[in-house]
Length: 219
Image (cartoon, rainbow, N blue to C red; front, top):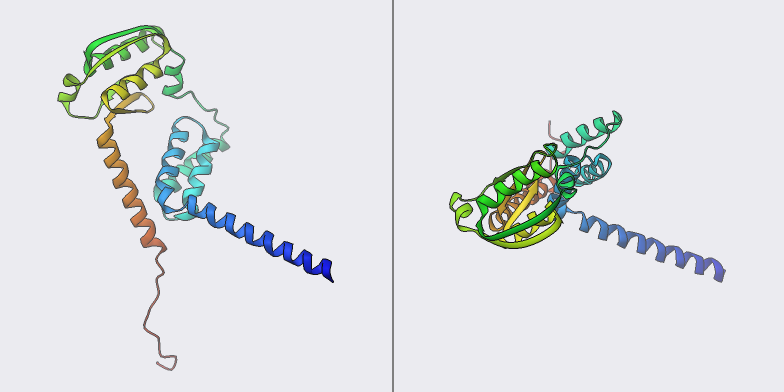
């Protein structure tokens, strides 16, 4: 009898722990983090990591089944997986493999630095890597923001990272371009996107019911 009671107690504790873990998992992947999950899945898709992307899109749809973009991306991702399409190297991966022999900027403005990087990528790769550098900030920033930097024999992605840090610019790798956005602007865009997504999720998860009791005998 004691063994049975003890076993029942263990089962209850195990069940409680399982429920708590489940609740924590839901909280971590809940609406507040859906935008990041979607962004990460989209980045994986663009990088050709289709299995990883599919996991992310499914997670978003678990908490927001009506999110059209996630559904479309998932359908496209699953189609590519079924076709057995092999992931192609992303632009970031290609640039990471390019070793820049020497970099020496002395108060060079951002515009000239981005032009240098684009030309250097083409030169080092023998024309195999085409990287367009686009700056989505005020035009005067390209003239006013200056970089002083000296490096040797480093991957081009490292140079780009340092340029971003020195000019307060966030660089994103797209299929054929490296896009720079002022960090302050990007932070605002991320905050707006998160707020809109959370608002949409909250409205869709809100119970919809008629709070006026119906007369069961009404004709």
